[in-house]
Image 1 (cartoon, rainbow, N blue to C red):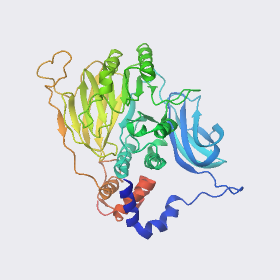
Image 2: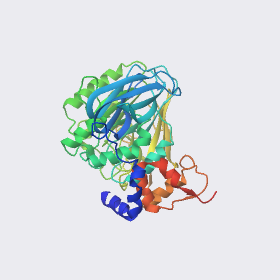
Image 3: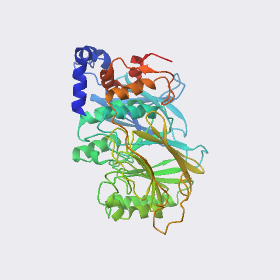
Image 4: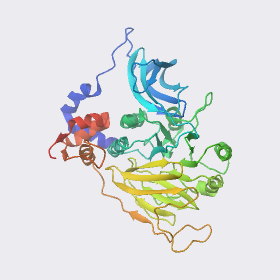
Length: 473
């Protein structure tokens, strides 16, 4: 990835060098005491969203105290509530609390009175109060190819949702600051307005520094607790269990935690759906195959015993929908990493090696999913009701024996598509700039070719759109 990006910058030559200061907004101005003023390095982005609170996280270029101001969305002149972090540090996690359920808010990040970031969000509905479904987008394995990652992010931006769920491997090396900067730069249009919940991947666990970075950026934490790599979230009538699957599950702290939380959810009022999210799942038609540690520790049986309805994973860079040991599952690892070949297993119902994301709606009566490619076209559309199979699959010719997957349902597998070059993905960005993916009006061309793709990686789709030149209708 880095070698290719270096060649792209070299190809731009003097043009990119001359435009760099203007494009990047210049260098930080100096404070009166001679020290550089703090500017936004990563973020702002949202985590820990609930019906009454949200965490606004951001990383500054230099240590400084910071604060956020919160106003009712759509009323910029209204009275603002301030939440401050007086610690002079680079990484800030500012909790905005005392909020109203299902309500929109605009926020502004300030450092020494200067606005350094802004966005808006909507709190989750209070449990048991909203008939509207909870909507979220699933994606993952964003690492390694910044162009493909940016294309997926651009497509997700056109898909409304209440929050985002990532199946892990956000970066190639969780210990490298450069990789995190690339991730936050590409995801900025999404994460400033939609909270992200993440299941930690193996690339965030390369070493202690990688794990510490994940905990710093996306770790789950209750007040007064140290951030963990696993956690649980309630969103309307749905409870999520985000697991660290990359270790031995035969015992230990996380196993004990999961057993307690599952038991607690059994008696939770108004809970309709339970969804487990883990990076490497127990079933997969990709080259990594099943997570043998989870299977050996009987984690799928534990989840099923506590009425978990769906298991979501990544790790293999494909889309897959299936049923393993009676449990419905999705594999979504097409967020930017190199695509993998598919070898269908008896649990596979639908699979395709393609860059993609999955729209999920958890309503009062059913869970519905729509898996989409980056051009907006549909890979798969399906759903289920409580205790039933996927409703888009034909019924098996004969009921399988107990404990055996419905192998008589033939899996639909689409082979990998040709590799996508930087210029091809940049061309797609222009082809969809007039509207949502797959609904662009007219043909578009990119005059700057690969150089434009490099600029896209640096500053996102907003400026890419302004550089596209319409040549047809």
